[in-house]
Image: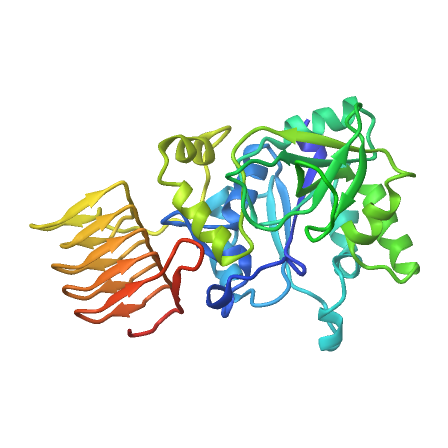
Length: 370
């Protein structure tokens, strides 16, 4: 069934408020979980669902995206039977970059026309989950839906901004609002939509002809009465990451074994760009607890309830608590971090004491000395 499905990872105007973490990179390539990037979860879910034709619609700051994805061979999308396309925006001037995703879909409509699949799934990168799209497609076909939107029932662990959804007793979407709306509903959209390829192309052309260029806001939300739009209830773990607070909270959730197992291994593994690093080295005096520590780290101090990416060095007497330290960071002798997020290659000098709080962690941009 999955061979009927082609994948689109839509990065056009993807919402983010990650401050310095997205100064030089798009949201999709923000590091997460000690060795991954946010886009790895959406892309791996598609690959594990048997989708062999995936297009990533890039928008801005996509150099790191190109470097991370490469030819797609880390996701087995680099041979004749499967393919990964990174499609930058086609823009005559800067004003074209401000246009909605339907405009960019139209500019790359040849990708859809050349594809052999009957259905297409359009997803975002900031919805961190591990989902089987075959189950979604199966329900889509069984319910004779025009469009199926994947939804999640909200609970106290769900953070980040999300679109609200209301379903009727038959599972049909009857209301949908942006996150700032007043709709009273415990369901949120995961920004994943399955529909026939022909319907998507029709929505692209008809909406643009009316001066409308946003897939969800214009093409879908305005047609709730005329199209059969069904909701699919996803029961697995979901992290919505489009703000610093949601990034920090969802990162800390990974320190719970049940969350780690569910997100990274069910229903399939999460793949990422492979980098050969030696195992983490724990020197005399090192103390660690409840932490994710990637390959290539050198630990001589104390690391508690924290996430360290590849190549991080924690020197003697340094204490790292409730913090996230990205690639090749170094914590100087006797320094202390608590509720801190350090981007890649940040060097903390000896004897520093840096503290934030869970709702407002201290953030340092990449390649800084503090």
